[in-house]
Each structure stands twice: as C-alpha cells, then as structure tokens.
Amino acid sequence: MTWWNLASRVREVPLHRLLGATRDRVPVGADFGVMDRLDDLLSAVGKAVEQRFPRVKLKFRPGWDLDMLRAVRKQHPRETFHIDCNSGYRLADLALFRQIDEFRLAMIEQPLAHDDLVDHARLQSEIRTPVCLDESIAHPRHAAQALALKSCLYVNVKPGRVGGLTNAKIIHDLCQQAGIPCWVGGMLESATGAAACVALAMLDNFTYPADIFPSARF
Ligand SMILES: [Mg+2]
Image (cartoon, rainbow, N blue to C red; front, side):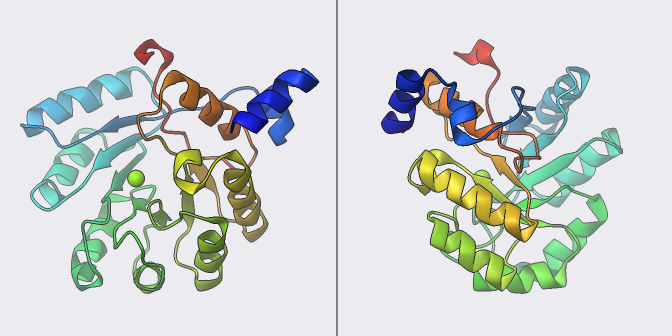
C-alpha cells in the first residue's frame, strides 16, 4: 500500500486512476450492529433512510435475527438491506436461511465459517438470496476457488484482509471476469486506510455501496 501511494505521488497520478478507476465518486452505505433495544435500531435505520444512504447493513446473529429483520422490513418495505452474519452459522441452519429469502435482502454476508468455501457453495445452491463472502476471501487464490465452486454471488473486498491493494485489485479483476460484483468493506480503518479504500472502491466492478464511513467520522 505504501508502494502504491508513493507511485501515485512520484507519477503525479491520483491513486484511483493508477489502480485503473474511471470514476471519481463512491456510493457508501450505512451499517448497524447489535443494539440493546430493537427500538434503538429502528430509529437509527430510520435516520439512515432519511439521509438517503443507498443501502443499510445489519449485523445478524442468534438472538438478533428474524424478529429484528421482520421489524426492519415492516418499517421499510422497499429499501435495500443486507445482513452480515460474521460466520455465526453452520450449514445445519439451512432452514433459517430459507426463511430469510422472504425478506428480499440484497445479500447475506459471510453466513458460514470464516475458512469455508464448500458449505457456502451448497448454501448458495439452496437459497435465492445472494451469498457474499468476506472473511473467507483472504487471498486471490481463495477468490479464484470461490468463483470456481460458485460459493457466492458477491465478494466483499478489504485491502487490509486480502494483503493490500495489489491483491485487492487482482480479486476485483477475477470477479469482474466471472461476472461477480464486489464492494469494498471496512474494518475501522484510520483516515489513511480509508483513503486507500476510497481509491480502490472507484474501480468499475465495485457496484454495491461501500462500507466506508462518512468523512465526518475522521
Ligand atoms: Mg463482514
């Protein structure tokens, strides 16, 4: 990442252009974790919808699951939502994921184990909602294998998880060739780390709104 930053300065080419981007804008989404009360979540989601965030991501785990999703969907029947399970489930929970289909989510992020590709492929073949891999893709090789196995229909790319911008771009390109859209995730980066994510997120195949925090955060 330092090399990319230096190359950008030496050549006087903005980082996003050097990476191959043709856009100079990035849509970003809103994210909400598990909260003490469902009402707190509903009010936070309501504010994000008012602020016109193009999509809202909800953490999803046992005890904060279907009832939460039902309440949010009831209040916002047409907005774009997805859930992030952070590897909280197993293939034995297939019946739960079948129930989730009715909520018309954009995707289910990392439902199964962090190091799995095979069970995710099985799950994707059994449900309509797209599966998105996050933790499972720590290297371009994992992305190539996930594409071959049809383990997902989206890939979340984080430079910090996949080994920097070079690997992030390789994964983006592999997914683009396979017709699998990507989006840039976030892991509480510093402003410096987030700047690299912004440049990356301008690449063409990052079509779903990114997890990059509004600049007010910094
Ligand atoms: Mg995630």
